Structures are given as structure tokens and as C-alpha cells.
Image (cartoon, rainbow, N blue to C red; front, side, top):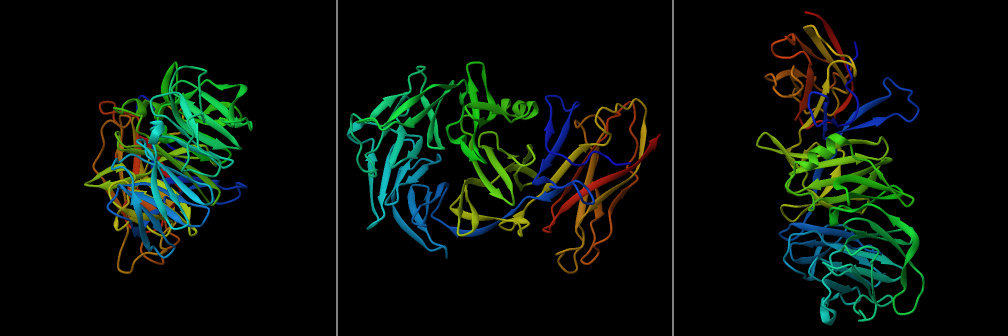
Length: 478
């Protein structure tokens, strides 16, 4: 019988209700449902080093309109060329927090949380422009119609630069997002509308062409959800996605739907968020590949990274692997440049390509994992069951190093994921053996004394491509 192997990450407050994980695997549903299966799992891309940029951490990366990639590594700003050549352009603050960058065609503006710095492309002239005489300490940044918009940290005020000039900020060019007294904590510009996220709700501002300060609030529009993490905002498909908060609570991921906030996180995921010491440090970015619009959400304090796929509306985990345990993904930021998806390392100065033909993270083991309930949803088992075989239908035999036999590992839990068996290993076949299945035999029986709810966990660490199609289970009453 088929076992419900395919799907995304489905967690619950209680493992006994649901404990389906997908780590470094993402599902893809066939567009026309006309294949051997209607969906399968693909291995998430590995990391291939593109360049080492300073000492790190990589706080932000941005491709400007002049085609140059700019990277803030530690306290240094670098330009990075297509051939990975580096130019050190100047120094910002020494924090480790993310940075935001925009350009207007002739200048680059960098906002760090303590100040703002401007690079003039002609001559690479670099200088600090804020706080300046205004005393403004910006943390968030947006750009529209030649104006840069920044907040003043710890207030509901935000400021605009002079038109097409990031070096000049007039003392009268500011306004207040004062629909509530809460601070502005994040911003994002989409469809020529600037969303100003506060702690409890969100205002939408537009360029009305007014004198002195050009922007005004869009009357009649207020989203009753704010932002819980300033660096979680990203552009996903046709909307803005962020980790939200409102007057009733926080820790829900939303995507904009017109002027509405639509929840896309799950109860189980939100329960995981709740266990972290803080969610305010969450970092989000997005990228698109082969029609999959992915939203990365990393919790540095929690040491976890979760990824939402807009094409399937399913979540999975992205993770590093060291000392036998998963950790947060190394990616701290993203930029699409030179035809590559480049991400910066939060630990050092490395800039990597997200590489579908790489099956390690810069030579370090990348482990994938899938856990799922053996029985179909809704089927409750009250009697012991003997599990004879589990057959994994997968792509095998391709791109396997000579004289190696990749392995898959299987373990199981009979009490809903609280306690686990030892691992069982099975060959996933040598090079050229493309038509065989991976089979695990003699998988024991459930028992009333140790639990009747079998959960399987399949994993692998070999540096090979991986496509998982289905799982077939031979089981009978014990």
C-alpha cells in the first residue's frame, strides 16, 4: 500500500497529532498531474563558494542599476565583479545586524541601524550622511521616484532625501506615521506604494507630489497587522511577506493580498516560533527559481531556517549540518546577479552560489530528511501492526561517484515522534543502476506498551542528486 510520503512540513503543537518534516527537500507538483506520480521531492541546492569578501559576517548584498554588486561584510563595503574581483570602498559601523541598500542610478545608500552612508558611483566617493545634523538613526529603507525614505529608530517619524540626491536631507522633509503612536519598524515599496510597518499595524503611503515632503498616507487604508521583525520583510511573487504582529499577538507569517494581510504560516510552525527566546531578530529574503517562489525565514536566536514555496503553498526547512545536528542555514542575505543566486554567510565573509548541481555546503555535508506517518491521515490503529518492507521509489544510479554505494538511513518512532529506533541503512544503488528501488526489510511491529502510531524518518548525506517519488509499505496485523 502507498504510505503518505509526499507533502510539506506539517507540524503540530503535539507530535502525536502531526510530525511531518521536510529538511533540505522541497516538493514539486507536476503542472498537468500527468506523470508517474503527481509530485515528488527535489533536493535543495547546495552551496558553491563564489568569493570571499572581507572577514564577515555578510550583512547585505545588492545589485545596483549600474550592474555592480555591492556587499557589506562586517564593517566594510565592497564592490564584487562577475569574476569575483573585489574593491574595498569604505567603512560603515561595526554591528553584525543586516543592512538595507538602494540606488538611484548614480548613488548607493546603505542603512545600518545606526546611520546611513552614501556611495557616489562617479569616483566611488563614500561618506556618512546620517545621523548628520538631523540626528536621524535609520534602520529601515525604501526607495520611490528618486527619493530614499528612512525611519528614525525608536520613533514614528520617517524622512525623505532630496530628489535624486542621497547626500542631502532637509530638516523639513519628514512626516509621522501617526495613525497610532507606535514606532515605524520596517518598510517596503511595491507597486509605487510604500508600506510603513509599525509594531501593531501598517500604513500605506504614496507619492502625492506635495511640496517639501512628497508623500502622504493613502486615506482609508490601514492594515491591522504590524511587523514583529524589522528584517523579515521581502517581496514574494506579487506581494510583500513578513513576520507579523498586532494588538492580539505576534509570530504569524503574512503575505499581502491587496490591502489585506493573509496568513501563510501554520499552527505547528507558529508553535515552533513561540519556543524561541526572541523572534525580533528574524531575517527574511526571497528568490525565484524554475517557477518556485521561495521565502527564506531564519531565526538566528532559534537556530532554525524555514522556507515557504509560493507555488505549492507548503513549508520546508533549510538547514546546515554539523556535529550530527541540524542548524540554521548559512545564508544571511541574497542577491541575484551574474545569472546566479548568491547568498552571504552569517559566520564569515564567504559569498556562495545556491547551486542545484552541488550536493554539499561548500564541501560540508548537506543532510536531507523526510519524516511522515506510516498510515493515511485519519486512520487510527488500535491493534499492533507488523511492518515487513518499505520501498522507496527514487531516482537512483545517476551522477554517482565511481566505486561508491550511496546509502539511505531509516529510523522510526511508534509513539508519535517522542522516541526513535536505531538507524537502518540500505543501498541506494551504484552508478548506472537506474531502475531499482531502495528497500528496507524487517521493520518490526508496533506494540501497545510502546505505541501503535508508526512514524518513519528517511534521510541521506551522500553528495548525489536526489529525487524522491513515493514510498510503498508492506504491513499486516501483527
